[in-house]
Length: 116
Length: 112
Image (cartoon, rainbow over all chains, first blue to last red; front, side, top):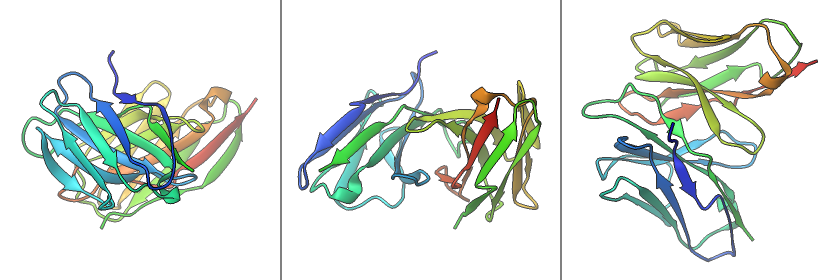
């Protein structure tokens, strides 16, 4: 079965650089979520999109932005990178249709971002 | 605000033992609760989803229960195997939101 695809899998950047992470949800899934997992930490919700509109927002820094495109893939743009942004970034997708989702979130393998 | 707590933080058992992992949450107005497995440096594998109207779910040797009134969920693993060694994360949605709030996980080691 098709899974959530994230690219790149690994990314190394210098401080103050910009990074773009991509997420391709499971086919027919209409909702995408982004989570950040720091070293030794539990995943923290950043932001989500339903039908290309932002649906919820968590502790996402102002330096980060994200969007969902017409083909439902999503990109997380991170600017002015800091050492503390080094983490594993997960994308998840689910099928929501309308109303609240009682459905399972399926996670991608993650993008490991290292900021030097 | 939803807070999720998992006990114990670490657990070491001999192969073949049945075990229970505990998860508690503060906001009972959840849409659902998911249990995940995470191997070191790897992604999150969804094990079981319990929707708010359900009391339990089973998949193979795994059984998860949900008690919204007490804010608790348990993951029961039968006949544990060394391959079950991993960190198990419990995550619950926050009232009115679909975002998952994670516990800090239970690191399970199954010794041969």
